[in-house]
Length: 230
Image (tube, rainbow, N blue to C red; front, side, top):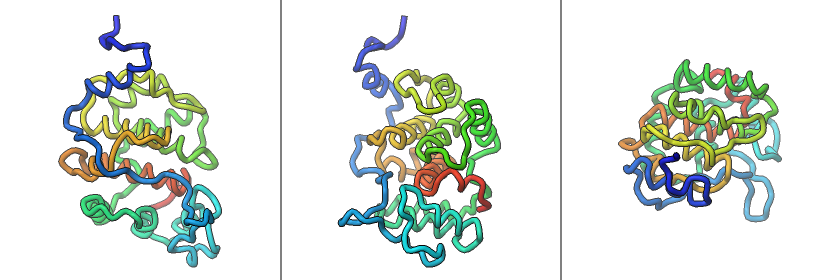
C-alpha cells in the first residue's frame, strides 16, 4: 500500500512536494528563461562574442558558434558564463557565479562518480552527446549528479523521455531535491524552482550549484561542451 494518499491521482505530485524538504521557501523571483535567444522583433540576438565566432548570429536554440570558439581557445569558460547569464541581475546569484568562476572547476561534472553514472546511462540508452536534444542531456546530467537521486530516477529514464510522475522521492537532501526540481524545470519548461532558491548558498551547496549552472550551459550550448577542456 503506497504511503501517499493521493497515489495514482492527479494530486499525487502535489502531495509529494508537500511532504518533501521543508527548507524551500515560497517562490518569489523567476528562474532563467531556457528558450531561444530572440529580441523583441522575434529575430535571433547576436551573442556578445559573435565576432570571435566569425558569424553574425547563432540562428538556433543552442549557441554552437560559441561552443566551437571555446574548443579553439578563443572563448573562455568565464566568457561563456557571462554570455549565458548576462541578463540576470540578481545580486546573490551573480555573486555565486563569480565564486564558481573563481573556483576554477577542473571539469564539467561535480565528481568522477557523477561522470561515470552519466556515461553509463548514456551508453545503456545509446544516447550521444553530439546531436542529442540539449534539454534531454541537461536533464540527464542533473538526475545523475546525485547518487540517491539517480537510484530513484534511473528506472524512469528512457531514450526519448523522462517519467517524472513515477519517480518516488524519498530520503532526499535539499541538494538532491534542488537537482530534481531544476531537472524537471528544464525538461518540462514549467517553473518548479526559483532563482532565489538557487542563489541561496545555505540551501544549495557549491557542487550542486555548479551542476545546475553547467546543466543550463548544456541547454544553451549543447552537449558538445562536455567534451571541451575548461
